[in-house]
Image 1 (tube, rainbow, N blue to C red):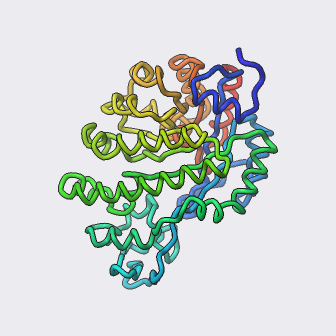
Image 2: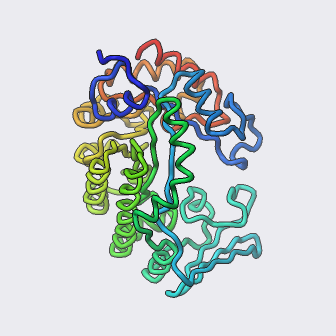
Image 3: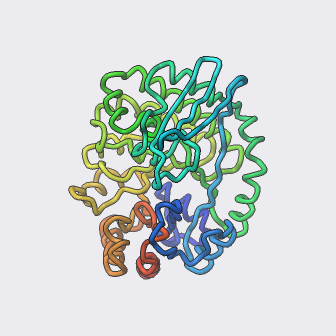
Length: 384
């Protein structure tokens, strides 16, 4: 049994599969966009407009969670000569970037389910269901994107982020919490740019274009990682949510991702941080691929989805990877407290206490029954 730890120490040790004083529980909370909450009540016990300090004070002070304080950086900026405009025509929202290499354009259905106003961001799950024209279709589109996302130096990234990071750093120190950043989107971000069906086809029919985009993303990620290290970040989380067998074969994931993910994992380690790789569903066919990655931990594997074998997940991954897992948002938290308690018990029985971070898979949403989240916390305190 380790001596008493701060939450920051506990989280980092758990990710490294080192001894901890008790298993950490890192809550994940998704407020959702207003359009997603339409017709539902806000069930989080903090206000919709709560400050970072107010939400952390409740999550840590009232619930006792090992929360993370998130920071973000912007590793790119538009090159000289880049401008943009957007407009709505016949219930379709258009956005065009004019660049020295030509025009980059996208269009989406502009309906009551679109959450971004009169803007089309590059990276949003909502793009996929709304695209009339995706951002990326050709090599010419990618050349324009590279000018819209022109690289900053590490020093420029740090300087631009320092003021925004100061508040988060202060809150983290006050509560003894780890600083964290989510960064790097890989094929998840590519899906937001190409569209889901279109990206799956491009991975077969236009592999050079997919490779070129992923290399652009990878080089951006490496600069982001270096900047996060300089800013004092503790944990870097690489998003692999849609980088699974739900969309690609194990061989495709190995081809497109393994080298880049391992290089990013090494860069995270060299920058003095620990790493997590987010995956959610479609994991059973790629357990060998995941086990071979150099990431310290895997975040968000949902054990409740059809075909998932928790024992096989443990046997393949736990020897070398810490696992962030717990009640399923889809199956347990919606069902209520008892289903959630049972899920917590199953996680402890299956995975033990080494290299385990209890968390919702992937989050409690603001419209879900809050009693379920409280049940998760209570059962964790009983078993940790």
